[in-house]
Structures are given as structure tokens and as C-alpha cells.
Image (tube, rainbow, N blue to C red):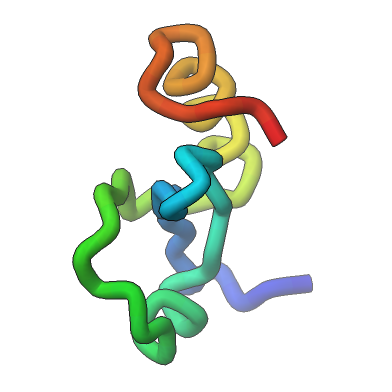
Length: 62
């Protein structure tokens, strides 16, 4: 289980798909120019937001 202080982000990829990544993964990511949303306290919150972004046409489903 992840530590409670872990935050989650949604990052839009070049393919227009949105990926859910941890804050730690975001820090090590080289793609700093992507559109992103967050932080979210839980991965479940990030998943729910990603579904909303797909429905709103901001992200493509994977």
C-alpha cells in the first residue's frame, strides 16, 4: 500500500491519452510540457477525474 502522503497526477501524453502517475514518477518524468491535473490524494480520485476528462473530450480513452 502507498504511503498516505503520496499524491497522484493525470498527465496528458502526446497521443492525447491521459496517464495517472504518482508525484514521484512525475518528478522523474522528462515530459514537463504536458498538460496535467492534480494533485489528487488518492489514485481513486485521479481515476474518477480521468473518466471526467475523457467524457469532456480532453483525453482519449486508452
